Length: 137
Image (cartoon, rainbow, N blue to C red):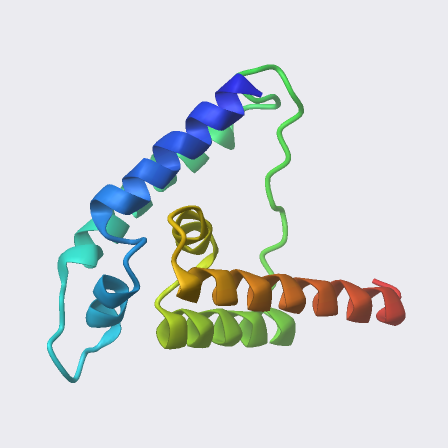
């Protein structure tokens, strides 16, 4: 639990320091036709670089560093559900300036917009689970 808390704290601080928890900064990055703010591209490039090597290392392991079973995604299918989910994720990010991690940080910071986003996100997740159960998946 302590390691999980520390990782979450470091992640949250990173989001705050990088500006990813600030919806105005995120929307400035997404505004390619207006006053574009490219600074988050460096944050994303750094995250992709670190993630690439982390997944490369993890792909060679059977267990986590704490000795638990390592469960990495195995599917390589790009199907309709993945594309629709990606479009919905991007649209929500573009409209609100939040994605799930920064929204939770914003919730902790007491941002009213984050409260609304998290409620909408949880509603969407609940709706997905309900539809999945009806579908039998």
